[in-house]
Length: 371
Image (cartoon, rainbow, N blue to C red; front, side, top):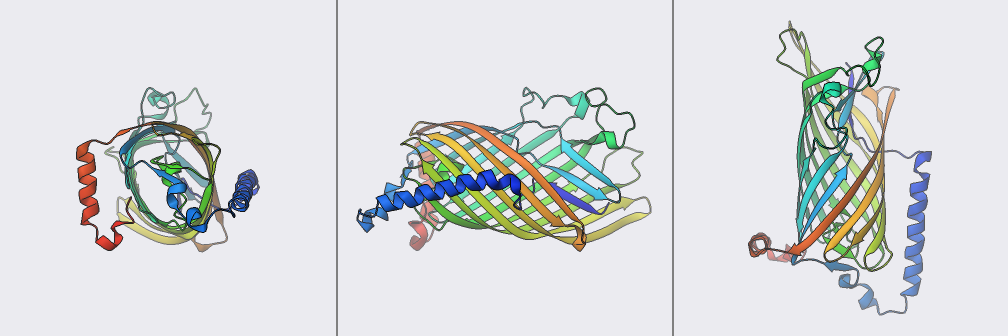
């Protein structure tokens, strides 16, 4: 087994991305028109962030979304491909946001169709947790997830006569994937609110955009060792991916509560893999590095008021990686979506007191950057 591709894998432009780029160009044209209309206004007023962003410092935002952002992976070898996936059709994420900090918990309800067909695809158990801290310019994100139980999506390639919907998939109930992801980003334009389209914990009042470069770093650990007495071999893969991304986002405000957002995030980086193959006569170790080129294009529509919020987001992620520094290239593409609803309420005194205490612990010269 020579290579392992972790999905989602996000990058490189193709013809299928032209509609998304057209939307972004249209949004940029709208921004130019707005600038021309506002030239007569005082420059001091144009630079006032309060005219572009409505903060919700006294409110807690709670949000629930339904999404298909689970992870699967592929193993590449000589004349074979393993397409290994968890038994998850849709996932949920419940998030809480207050001022500069957001928390999220991911889960997969069994009552959702496609999440409970254990007889066909086996049982999957998944947990996830994420946190984000956003200042006026800096954004720090971190996510951790663990998934146990997978199945072979292309079982028909290995089982003669296999029929989808009739025969069960080949299952890997004890396979475990652990992932730890982080990203550090810098927002150039203080008048652009990333919170308004990510956690919906702010409201964008005027159309605006910003370049947001970032450094992302992801660690994956995959182990297919089981307790079965007849398992003769197993593998454990440790993957680290580091990428530099140059993203641009834009929010078109339709009225006081409706908006359309778009973004394009190209990136370039490296994937380092350390593979341990356990055999009866001892372990074998293999390591290699691959160049990865990625991009992700997003578009969203939302309703964001002081009390209620709702919306949807659609994105395409594409990647190209050079396999083991050879002329062979592996391409991966995924389409994501999420639908969300949320509500805001006055923050309890305990929450306000604790966040104020954290802010006071920050050196005074940086304190005004934390909202």
